[in-house]
Amino acid sequence: MGPMGAIGMMGPMGMSGTAGPAGPAGPAGPMGMTGSTGPAGMGNPGPQGPAGPTGNGAYGEDINAFAGFTAQLTDGNAGGRDAMHARCAAELPGSHLCHISEYQLANSATLVPASGAWIDPSVIPHAASNNDTTFNSAVGFGREDSAFNCFAWTSSASTGTWSTTFLRSDGVVQATSSNTFPAPPACNVQRALACCNGAPKTQLAGFTTVQPDGAGATPGAGRPGMHAACNAQFAGSHMCHIAEYLRASSPVSVPATGAWLDPSVNENDDTVTSGAARFGRETSSFTCFGWTSNTATGTWSSTHLDTDGNAHLQSSNTFPAQIGCTARRPIACCR
Image: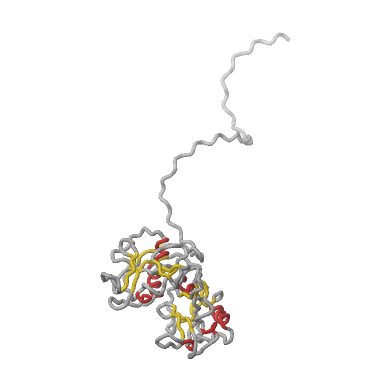
């Protein structure tokens, strides 16, 4: 065989054949570096979410919050303190009439109406004397129920004996009475209500349908029997003492007969009728002998809520004569 000859010139490329099936994917390559963060978006905020559950506050330091001023005006005769609470709750749900200390501690920036606003005075819990009214604020100050409130918001008097408390349009608290000189605006003035919605731990459960006399709901059982009557109708409740009831800021109307409850006591062991958080239960006086007596004569003393929402201490030397421990009343029950 002779030697191989030279390779000839390449001929033209023929037509491409049909593509075969794709092969399997190869392994993923390494991740690249993270790029820089872009500018923040400028979208509109979403709608406000629903309100959270009601808090329960605390005994020593309530959550002081201001709800607003009512649009409806009233003079000093709104029908009682419970009616004042109800007016606040009707316009600003969950609110009640403020007392001075809780309003001031809320640090509200809401302007006071030009005509001013009604408000309860406050009380110092460790005063050297019984029920020391104050027009200032501090943690632990409570609601004063027995003075400077147009007779528990049941009077529109402009003459005679009266006293009242209100916020002026400049936010200053003003307490006035019929002996103030020169003559000040009286209980006949139409004003808004200052309404707060802090949530105290104490709540009014209700008034019992059982209406015992001073001998108690269960004869012979005394105060435990009164507590038991509350618990039987309102599970987990007990008979209120005055400070508990006032701290509850209840809008519920007091029954026409009034309601039994215990008095309260301050840190000097004085019997009190106001609502500071540090007041406790008085057990040694004004209780129809520990809720064991229905006497109408001799020596007796008792405590009850009147229809104006104020607590009244009564005894056998009260003038004019009262019906005493013979009365049949429901029991005010607190939780």
